[in-house]
Image (cartoon, rainbow, N blue to C red; front, side, top):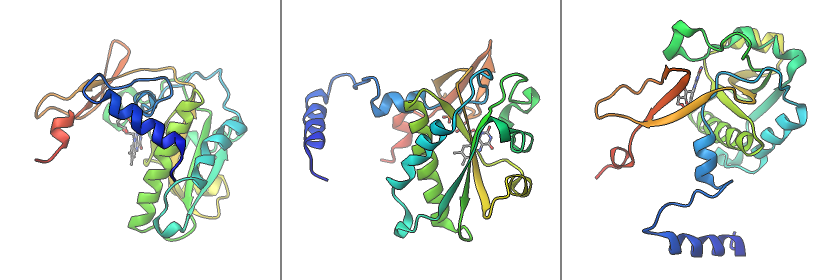
Length: 211
Ligand SMILES: Cc1cc2nc3c(=O)[nH]c(=O)nc-3n(C[C@H](O)[C@H](O)[C@H](O)COP(=O)(O)O)c2cc1C
């Protein structure tokens, strides 16, 4: 897709190589930094259906294995949140905290299903979809967390889903203070909380690259 946008960005990138990375508002790096897995929400803020629609709308613009587009999405707003909330598990690394804390529960969800028996490429599609949706959520001022720990059978039955659910996204307005921190060499990758701040250790770029 050769267009002026891409050419312009390429020129800008060339001109900043060697200097500090761009952190412009709305840039991919700023969306990625704000896209933290959020497990505590401002409960007074009710996520609307049109906001969930906007988030799910990324899905006809993304890659899909053989372009088969096997994923389908169930939008759950406040009225039906009670059908999902008791059947999800958040923050297993902080199990003693029993997240979400009372009063900070999410009131909206996107339940992602596959129309076919899932195989390896379905899970790759799922990852691309989920990350794209979470970034879109950040772009419209929301946050979320993708959940693989949930009661599939119960949620399928409660929402009368025609397909097996693969993942649940909890979406809302964040009430959390989350910070990325460098992971010490040989350190623990588990997230942790101190004085109300949720810390997420990440590997350095040097540790990620294989020589
Ligand atoms: C495939 C996958 C499954 C996940 N399942 C859960 C889950 O069931 N419950 C939960 O609280 N977080 C879940 N998470 C969120 C991770 O715990 C989170 O990505 C990690 O702690 C790093 O935090 P960050 O997303 O803010 O970088 C999942 C993430 C991924 C990618």
